[in-house]
Length: 462
Image (cartoon, rainbow, N blue to C red):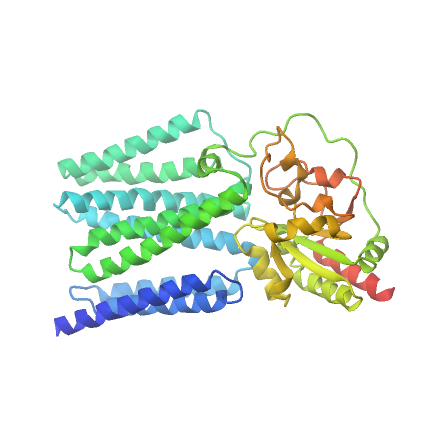
């Protein structure tokens, strides 16, 4: 009977992994992303359910309670969370994965394992998982606004944080060598402290990269725990963890690299550069921001041939996507061509703008990424910037700017630029935007949803 259950368990794990891979593949396109989420969710549910059949598994009631409580909280949170808070939710859930990996490693270590290889793998999983959960919590607090989004730079931060990490690993290795469990308490506490120290100096502009990086670390930690479990009574589950963790680690690593490249930053610079901690030197920008009346802006849009919309996080905060869809429909009814320019880091997580616009019913073929749309800006009669800031800042082309070299949307090269913005504040990077002072740029101050609604009304009235 045990052999039959083992065969069934192995078969389900293999199928679940294959379906999980198909789900990841489907996530590569907004059109198939929903299907990919369903695939991955079903595969994970099957893998968790079949684990109950694993030989040697005990504490079924405790496990079932954990699944129901955790699943219930996750389901409720996913149902009520706003799209603007999605990055925070991703950070927290990712952190829970890292914490779970650290907890599994702790159980393995505290179980008195004699195999040095398994102990080493468990320690590595504990290191990565602990850093991931602590860092993810800080990322959540920054994104939620409960901690300042600007970098919190401590004196001699790199020396202090490196020393904390070295001492923490030293406690873990020494505890493993002498087989004394009391050494592992400071081991875990110092690792959590290191995760905090690592993330505090990272500013809000870099949070999308940080979340992606911690996601990759969580996957790696899960894979390491899987290797440690392979030789135990739950070896089949260990193999599943290795495969799933490796997939998540690889996907998260690739996404991290792509996002860092989109910002023209290295991973090391994101983690240790404290981007945004120092204000740009050179004094204020010459000139002033010039507001425009709604009726004038509506006329400019109505008589344009090509309008390009560049959305950003401000659109998400104002939940203006439906009004933007109405504005698109009104302009297209008057023969205006409308396209959308999507910067990879326009929101607080990859695909943020794509999801919001698709949710409002805007066709995918109207959405263009930076490389596809940049050549069209000089031909655009009007570019409508809605809640975007750093990703449209021409200062990225200026030597000496903290943004120097960051790939941006070249909206300033359009004939006219209209910027919908609540006020005159700076973006996540804390840097003044040269675009707002340009001769071809005018400001439409106010809530993005309200301003877009007024533009729709003005165009319809004309």
